[in-house]
Image (cartoon, rainbow over all chains, first blue to last red):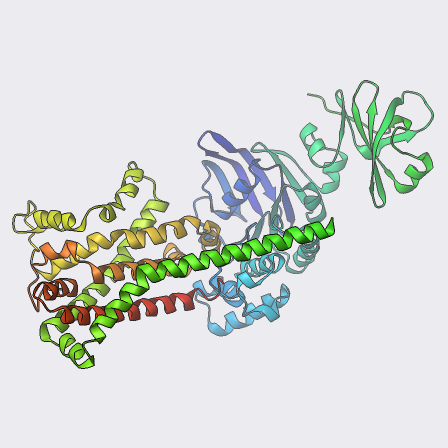
Length: 318
Length: 275
């Protein structure tokens, strides 16, 4: 079911969390709400879930206006950053919860919970309590619990934020596969641009309660709508009014054309990639990104003088 | 370097062990001095009379009637506290209203007030000269009222911090899964509060069993009607029958211990997965 948010506003005291936000989430998509902390992305998710009442505007699930419906009537599945596991219930009881409060027949609950535990690979742990699970397992349990009631919409609020880097990477890939299998309209809130780009088909960039840009990961990276998006979706060099991605700076040892002179301050090896931190005569810092081979060919090391030339740059008109 | 670090670690461990030993020593010594020795002395003084005297004393009609009343009323008061205490804690944590800080502070007053004063005040307010026209003095109702007053803080103060720490997202998750408010409370909130409620109930029960000051005035101490064990015991001492006082005390102690252990065991069983 598609989600339409129309001119939603939400204030907490003097703080404007959402300022006239309108977004359309296509049915079956996996969309990321991306923004820094305090940008309003979680509030938007909670408004869609019905856990927060907007001050103005509308929320539509499919064609139904659910703005005034309580969370329990919306048929959304919600997953929280800190799992929100029912700690007094077993894994099995956690997953069965939604079905039990809906008073589904026992046999149906039995089959459905079994199915879901299999889907999230927790079959062997059904009798465990949340305290006996790892963070990754708890979050998979929370996902199964949310999916148990066949939600029209799946909402994930920083679901991998509390997990360590390796587990986070695993779960992202797993979530993508899961989405391909289940096809439920999914929104994931994250402050991590890499996570958004890796997981989502569509990204909504939010800043200070406003939508800055909506697009595919590639669109955001290649043609950011403004300064904020440009600098939020990846590292960037700001040279006066122009923006250059570190990848778009080419280095050479000989002066040529309008290339500017700079000194290598630090070299960071990131496996295949090498990051060179440069400083110009006028004190301006530059970040350049090149491959291992390129760096080797240039024999880059601290103190080497290079000539930097942006191969592609962006200027935003205000 | 490594050996230094290892030495530091083991020194820390030794210190930790020594610290643990010291704490254990203090705990054991203190508990013995304050609790175990007096209790043992009590049991001893009743035992020295012989089992026969003990049995005779506790089965005296007046003694057993007081014992029964004490236990029943204390259980009643403790159960009532479970309800009201949880409700008050809920309001103090989840609601906001002007004067909440004051109400929160007032909760502890029954602890601060000398119990005899509490009894006196209750007698003034709900006795024969009640300004509200409510006279429950020298009745069991008056007894219950006095005990409710002095046991008020226990459940409130044990539930409050747990409710404060309770993960609100658990409730939101339950709500999004289709649970109504009542179902959220019954299936999510209550099971998580129950251990704390039980702790408060156990404390309230223990306090009610031993309470003397606040009940001695308002209950009227009518044998077979409003006389509780603590007052009966005091009477036995005054009338020169320390054996009777000791015997009833020991039985009261045993009953309390049994109830506290039962509540503790239930609580232990309920929280077996949190450990």
